Length: 596
Image (cartoon, rainbow, N blue to C red; front, side, top):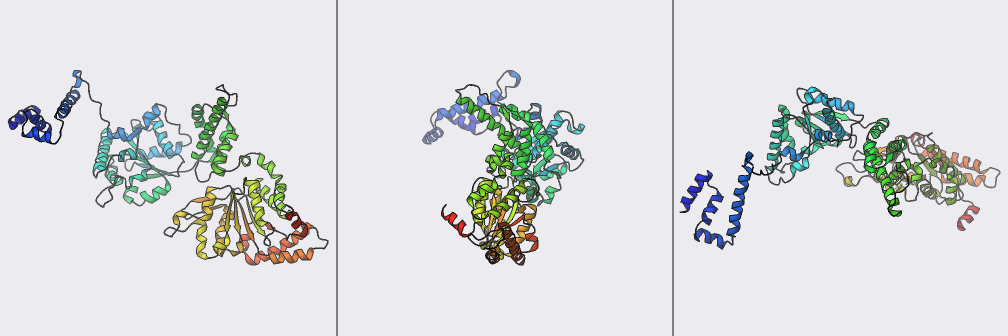
């Protein structure tokens, strides 16, 4: 009987599936099949409901134009994993692309080539690679593109969504295959892949037989069935793309350089209206200039225009929060404070990011330096000449007479032990940088061996401690506005001075990971006991004589220089802004210190 029912069901459905078998078993009086299902504790009524629901869904989907309700259409892979930038441009969701007309033109020129029409935007993070791709979409929507590109759509592919839920081998390959088929059928898609280096290794199962996304795309790229716009950083391009020549040759790299400060100001002026509308504030021209100037001077581990845009954005958010708090304090009444973002708001954001005191970012900094000697003299007793020399060197740096690329001041403190060299360094850290903690201290007795020199910039790849970085470079990267104290320089290995020559001359140092660390906002102070004997002899010879304090200082300074020339190389000493000699403390200075 079961076979007869199945035959009838097969005639109706065209094929006998598991559903027909279960339906046939449920249609009989309790027998072997039904007893077996009941023994397995199967709810027969629930199974019957599920079968009825499946038949209803099939009827609804196949109803067509007959008035039946259709099941919602399943999204295609391209719709699910891609964002149509041209559609975003039409709806006004994209920011304008300013100052990148040349890069957009170069990209369009590559796209209309007959072969290898796949540009790859290569540049540092934050210089505007994604904005250039969005600029292409804006040009297409505005009709300002070659005729061959006017009917194209720029689709941004989200690799994370493409990889989602592909747990088993073959699922990712099948999804990517469907994506490529949809792109080829559409015929009007320019696929933009941000962070293109992620294609290498994406979707691979880890064994030798599996293929990643890069290898799956190569045939389509070679045939010209697929046009891709890639974007990646220079480091990732060298690390992943260049190692695969077959992938590299299918792309035309286009270098995107960091914009100049003037170009960045133009970019900010073009974008500031959107940020003003978002934060419900207005931006002054001084705030735009300050965002560019401060970001270049104090934020050295990021690139324009990204860091300047973030400053403008957060300054607007800060003013909006101030307005909210002021209104809250007035029990909901409208605050009468200004809703204009000014330079001081940008300075406050930079101060929070970098730890630089706000006063050092303003024009008040110059006037504060006039009283620097008095502040330092309160901390250090009996070294008036050394205090004046230090204040003179700092003022010279802040006045703009020194090179802006070099450290603010490069100083060598020479003198006997216990006369106030380290204390003066702490004093300048507190008076100029805001706190004694804004100081990086290195005991150079720990760098006596040749192999220990690598600890300053970090061990080379493959050596123990490579991931930890360098003691000097990492400390300055974290706090670029600081005093660098190198104590007892005479104990350091000679190779240490080779590293310092670049820092003293160019104000930068490259660590073992290839990152450039900026020293232009630091004061570098080196202490040394070289010449202590000459200082004591000169001081004792002049004691009781008719020589003035300045004349004694000049005599001891000349004697110390002779000692330093016999110990250090001339090219090292010539790069120092000032060699400051510390005198032995006399009885009255010691009495004053005891009374503190």
